[in-house]
Image (tube, rainbow, N blue to C red):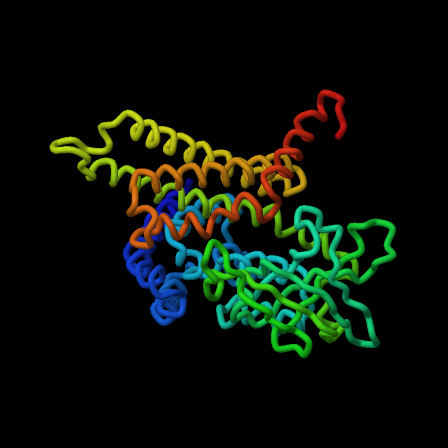
Length: 396
């Protein structure tokens, strides 16, 4: 790393630990709304420091970092669920900004990209549907039919992260149902959430919690929802191609955030092992089983970090298409490491780990989906195996 990046990471970590972590107890106990005012103050501080939207280029108003360096910063921000929102690079807004920056018209840029980049609004990305397998997006059922200078949307989406309070959704819908190539049938449309026919059905209860704002997942319905044809993002039929542009870098963002969580959970595991007395004069960390948990967690987290940074470096140099095997590998491997490290930390904390008195139960609920969204483990393992077998003459 350069000296400048090293200094940035140190300063960012201090900011997260001193300015954001103290807000977490209120977040756990009272929800997102209770920390919104304080978070807005922290976001203003981030802007003043020049750290705003680190995932965007200089020309787009960001920090101009490489994907690898954004990943390194993402691991620091991942230490707290407030880290990425404070820097205006939380999912799904970060991915939406990236594709809007590349594919919007002048009018779309002014109406949707700029307010999102500035942090004045939030957005969501609506692709997953309850009636169809999310791992096979060619089966989309939501349609958008051209009617004059408008598109008319009908269908249902769910697990639309951050729809609660979002100003607009980027919606994947079938516009070219007769296209020979199934990947050319869908398009992306920018749909304001106040459009007639747009219905926010409910926030889905996930692990017993509905969440708020960007920490929630919603079910949406489109009932003859009309949007201007000028809200088409890119070309008709380009929906999957545009989605792929965000998925490769997006998986780097996710994996590095998970690593930040795993590293902090490992710190909590060590703190608990060193301080918890299980018998007079005997600490939890003196037990070999707990020592094994610590050693495995440290090793797996470091391996996950290096593996993800290697994939990010390849994307920077050769593009996401050249790094497909690496992207699939980190997606299932890092998600598994996160789950294992969290589980060991919960176990070491005993009953305390099951409560919301620490961040562990919060992460356990919110991050179980890591092994499902953006492609379940099983799909990515199959892809990684397929890439590994090709040099041996077996095409799957």
